[in-house]
Length: 218
Image (cartoon, rainbow, N blue to C red; front, side, top):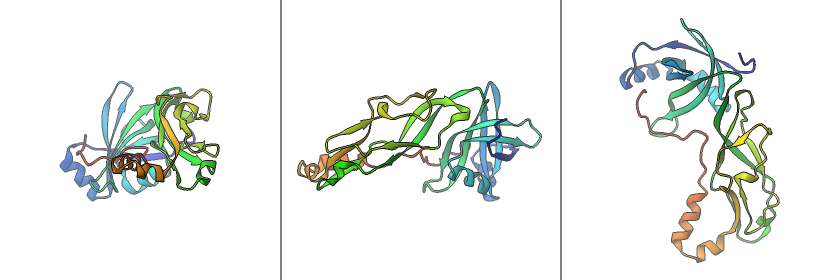
């Protein structure tokens, strides 16, 4: 067992479906499913408050303790949110072991004062806010820092230029993907509203796990 992994206490759900999942949520629970490793998927119920505290901290790997069943190590695979995009309504977990390598999405944290921002009207644009990589379960990074201090107007930074925390990690995002660039806002506005809207849209951040409308349970 991964000694640093927090423990989630759960109990099995005998009934599945959107109606029963709603009842779970009404009593303060969070419906979830655990799958993988060639075993049958298991529908479980977590304490919603406890689970959300862990999720908000960015924790991804957990030890699961299920009443009346064997526990193990699990990886948070996906979260589903309500139609407002604020409340978690369902969670998907995947069984893993300590020797396993997994593909994960990790948020980027842009640090440093880009020298190009000293130019009037210059802005830092980051079309994507995360990258995908393959790493060992025991080495899941919560965030990857990206230094943008060297960027000047017209410069851009690609995913392939990001320094990964460990040499054993492998980048899954296409290396040519632009993750940050310095542009002059005034030039963009002069080129017309259509292009200006494109640049504006590209600055919208992407989240670690995409907020999805409630699709029901399983």
